[in-house]
Image (cartoon, rainbow, N blue to C red; front, top):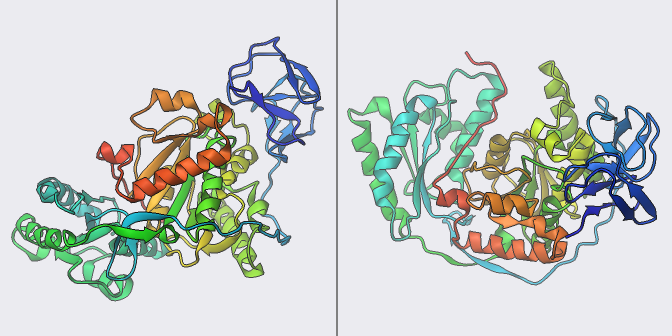
Length: 494
């Protein structure tokens, strides 16, 4: 295993890949450095003296300014480094040509739906229109587990606290997300469970949001309309089970995969191992005609120009500018600091500023051109790399990826997390210590990049793993029975 890494030849800091004690003598390229203090794993140390107010360079880009002079071998972190980011910015389009080439076909065993969409699971979903019926939905899930068998893989209730007492765009987003969930191809059958008096009631959803649907696949029940909602709902679930059991897996081209990409609980190695592995995976899938979606807009701040310059058209560049500045205005409208990031866990892991975090985060995008820019809740339409408007919150962002069409979410982490999303959520560790410590959470170890595997080898391994998951292999969160949904709350509550 390497002891440290200098990510880019222009960097004036290196990153410790193991705890480095004070007084260790290190040779980093042309630099001979003696550490001036203990450097924790994932943290940065200066390769040469850096004057007060000077740029700190990592990934080949500025991640902030020094608050005080830092000697060669000095620890560079939040105590002596501050963000260089400002407020709203104006941007110019400097398009970068893509060198990505097509590669050979690959296949997985998935479910072809009657509308032509492809799912990687054959589940029955219970979707409440309002939080008031959450307990009923959960009771139905427990009772309907007896229907699992044959080709029916699971029965899941996706509870949430919304659907009423909302206004404006906040209410519209909830309705859009509920409609997206109803149409998601990982669900072979759906029971939409309403109360009857809520703002986002079933008749309204049918008329304005859901659109065309297969009445064999989607059933509706308003609890206030029947005497025994449990009994009536179970009848509908039994009908759905018969329908869902009629689907079976078939060979499908990987070009029909849509994969969401997200990170959380990041550490100093996330941008060195796990995120670049996912980026190389994204390029590999796109080279086969597939689609990936990158989100968590606040964690693009400071690295957004790298994505803007990869936009395939000036129109997409303009949409990306709005994606960034609209989210900054969202922060400002709530009188919040735009750059109040990274989190305490990020800092403990070695991330010092938002630029530091964002430059690592955007590694997940690989090198492919940006082909689509999506509003929150909008369905993906363009194959290739898409950018999606959603916050950095892990559960909210992962749900946003799912409702925009992702059949699987890849989630990189340096500290670990057990959460799930509406679709299989693959946990990818940035370091081998985490992979060994939390085997019940972690599905794939990208920490091997600084041990015994190249990025390209890991990307191919991850691609093969994703094909296996798409073909039915359960991820750790699924094995534990975890399924989460979190809608982006943006407005007032009545």
